[in-house]
Image (cartoon, rainbow, N blue to C red):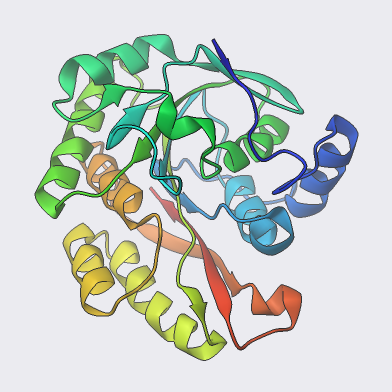
Length: 269
């Protein structure tokens, strides 16, 4: 089964030529490359979040394998859903799912199950792929949609993911991408203030504080759960530091600062 694009022509251009041009305008070919164990990258329409996604994904060294986790915006499917497709298609071609790693994750995890329903209309993973296709010659990936659970479950999933990566001997050639936008539909300054608290916790590699701040401060960071899982897995694999590559809000594109969405690009290494 091939998972076909759900948001081509909507979140990003639908033709190969137009998409390549837009991605090239957004990536930084001269960026210094870091060996990243984890990344936070946004997933809105490229007009708004593309400058942040392009910058952060340009700043990581190419890998043979990626795990891309995104939140469930559609409400469809299982709570922790690993795509059962053999490959995903974008206007730039097909990307194979790493079957060996996917199977190992399913063997080890008590939470993640094979499921296509959560992926059919979900954009959060799909929009990362054209950037990776433009920046990598060849790679495979594992797509996982993350639903709602408690911090203990998220930490368990992070440890399961790290164990699967180690058992497949991929820990030196993998990056885990947490696909997430930040605060939604608040005034620019209010969004920046809230997002600063989430970013501070991520840069401290502190998944528990991130989880608490999201709840306590009502931070509408849609991919906080994938980010918590990524942080746990990355630390299990040896991550020691993090840095913010770029932050902006939709107001800086639209000119409307009364109700914005925040976008942050971060690298964990």
